[in-house]
Image (cartoon, rainbow, N blue to C red):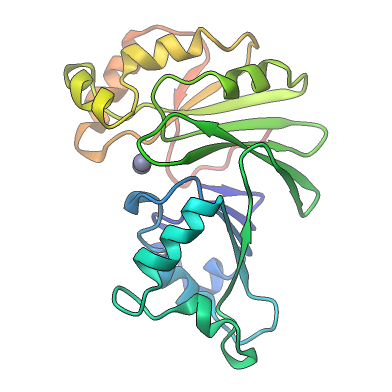
Length: 234
Ligand SMILES: [Zn+2]
Ligand SMILES: [Zn+2]
């Protein structure tokens, strides 16, 4: 998911998307958590956009996410240690910056707040706010509270992206892996007191059609399945 072209939320697919010169427009990567579907193409992406310039791509995450990046990905077994190599001027692959829950950072005029949500590893949602419009992005999570309190207080809220991963028949799997089904997705949405469009994300590929059908069957107004490669403007 790209925000204003230059900011990526996670890196599941960005290294496989379009061309290296297109990928180069992405200057910031915000990681929600350490699961592989959110990191899979990060090493490829960083390699694709490496030009030797002194201001490389910046990767943001909470302390446990950045620790996982170092020990599980850039560990010289899965991939070269780009973090260590980036200490040398000739190999500035990336910068890493800590962005802890409840902290707001500003990138290109956009205030970005990380908020803890309820997943099997430390995971954050993000609130993006350019002053005119605010957007909530919530994936991956089971039932959660704080992000809804925050979004309810956000007077300029324009949209919320919310995960719905498994079909209702897989409620047990959703519960143990801390995800939502259409049933629990609908329960979460009751916590939102603002009338804004909702965009469903993170549908498991194997079940995309079934989850789409079950979301549509909820007959909730203003709920949409997020489309791939489509621009949304708020
Ligand atoms: Zn996950
Ligand atoms: Zn995921």
